[in-house]
Image (cartoon, rainbow, N blue to C red; front, side, top):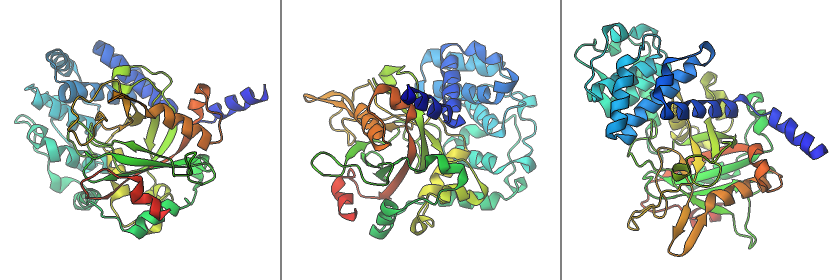
Length: 406
């Protein structure tokens, strides 16, 4: 009885992040089923519903692209009143309308009001401009005046710096492997929890390598004494950069905040529960995030990439498997199946081998956090995840690259 009481107490202490993520995904799934419900927005959910609706329309146009989805997107965009939408979503709506050949309403875009743009608005503009410049501005809406945007050059410099490709030295990798975070109060609930490390190449077509420290800061090992590890994939099948929707999994530091409650959409997400990942919340001069970053890597761009992805509104990042099979053995990521930005685990059967990496990961994480390995304890999983592109070699990251540094 005491154990069940303790579990209930811990669940009750979970941050709002997991709840918000689940609520947001619920709204996204609601709009995937019926976009007509998007016209009804309660006051307390309006911002979340706005994000969910734009997310679904964007996916229908740029991810699915089926005739039926394009028709639904056109119908929705024609009806949509976006005057009170965030600048970021107004920019996305502009791209969507131009992509589909729709006319923007003057009341929607008659004044961009650059003087009131926040940092996140500027970053969203720069991100979209990189890949969607032709669809960002239409003939019947005014040109965005970059000279009017406060601190535009500074923010653009930060944006470009975040895109720099780091070549990590041996000392920098070792520094991250040995680093003990300086826990700030806002992140104290993640102290004494597991930490995952995913090391990748700049070319994300090559699989990454995942390693794990337990809640006491010790590396998890297999029964033979070798460092526990799993290959993972952080590659987007859309070929987009990490700072854009449906792009590669961004580098940076994440919190791990439980799992999604249901194993729904198994064709896309696989048989096992998917882990919820969240960016570190913004703070003054990113002090919260930088408390989790070793000094010798603070001058690198890797952690900045995650802040850009966060500020332009990337969300719904997960670690999950998939029911879709990779039918191309020649692909450099075989037998993985690329995602729309999440971290992929191997699943399905290939060459007589059946992969259940997501299930094995969940079990290993429970043990690493001092929990009994059982389904009911999935929801108690919490910790940190570091995602790093260490160099530009054209091959998968292997344990032999890292074991000598431990």
